[in-house]
Amino acid sequence: MYHIRQLRAAAAESGFELCGATPALATPEEGIYKGWVAEGYAGEMRYLTDHRAEVRANPRRLLASARTIVCVGKVYNSAGPEGVPISRYAWGRDYHDVMRAGLIRLVERMRQEAGEFDSRICVDTAPLLERSYALYTRVERLDEMVARAAH
Image 1 (tube, rainbow, N blue to C red):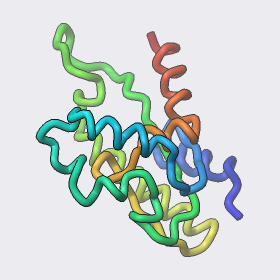
Image 2 (cartoon, one colour):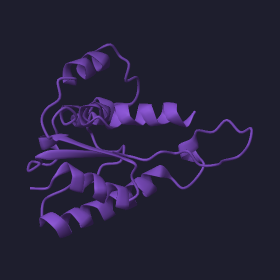
Image 3 (tube, rainbow, N blue to C red):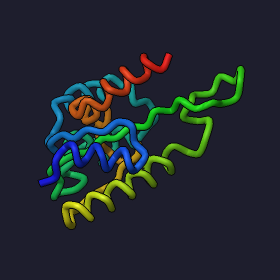
Image 4 (cartoon, rainbow, N blue to C red):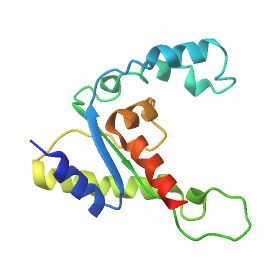
């Protein structure tokens, strides 16, 4: 069994300031999401309403063997261009690449310590209700606290 303290230490060594885990179960927010789509808020964004919509609320539809979802976060509090209204995460390298590289390191480290397991790395592109899972892992709340402390 891989303990949460081990996970957080491995995540920190992989470049993440925030880390949490939650069971890979269907999320109750599926009904809210479906209502949001039914109200037309998805607009022309077909990727929100096509076959992927049925995958979003249950991670086992994405990876059948999933038992745990690990959510990580980075604090983007680096120096950037003065007077330019650009989000902090956009000042440097594409965050998709940064996050994916760190997640690859994290999975490798976990496999060294816990043995082989199935995994799927998702950085904003998989059909999951990722903010819901981040909330269950408390990563989203931690992110808010860190953001407030940084200001």
